[in-house]
Image (tube, rainbow, N blue to C red):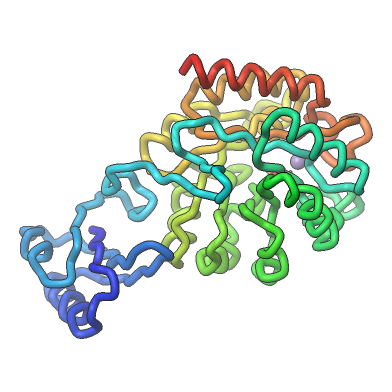
Length: 333
Ligand code: PEP
Ligand code: MN
């Protein structure tokens, strides 16, 4: 059960509500986000919810049978829309596009990618500076200096930045240059990181774990929400299966299932989803058809020279065409 409290509720009143709930054998978890105050109540007792709904200080009461409560769509009448400012919104019915290199590499690369985004009216740049790599000898990113460089190029055009954060201690130094923190697949269940992002006011995109179930992804989002941050989105990026002919199995089912189970925007990442450049554009379009609120993909002026994920990165011509097709599809839908 989720109880929404009146804003700035008197402490005595909330104590009274909590003790009434304890009497009904519910454990009570208070949650305060940037938007609302909630009591998340766990218990099985059957009772007339009007007895809680009538209490002073209670704005609304919702029975939510899912174990992930706050991210469930069983209580919210409207889907979550994330407003990044300058008219950039995610989850408002449009198809959001986030495009850019796997990794930020150098100024020339940032200059050409910025030009490409501006030309195609893409409002969000992706680019990693702290890179989780399977091999410790692979390029692991330029770190905070790379992020500052990315910001220098994006800012004059009002382009928003999504970049991966790998550990809680990075959040503070990254925040001034970041609009969306990406939690990568390998960190999808790093609960300390999720807790820390719950205390941030920045938007967060959580990728599904390499072998993560849909339910585990929803629980990861619940961690962030329950620590105070409602500006959240979910990302399908492929899972590891017995199939080895491509990098990952892009689980297009997950897009519809996540949309059905949660009010959060769902973003699809076909680049990591399949891991092979030629297949990315069509899978991106398939994800739009399947109901994704946005697409995140990798693009580079010279993909063959990219320092990471070259094999799945589109070149500018392929990306131009993909954007045209996404726009056509969005209009059609
Ligand atoms: C990435 O976005 O470049 C990345 C490393 O993604 P994932 O965590 O999905 O592998
Ligand atoms: Mn990548």
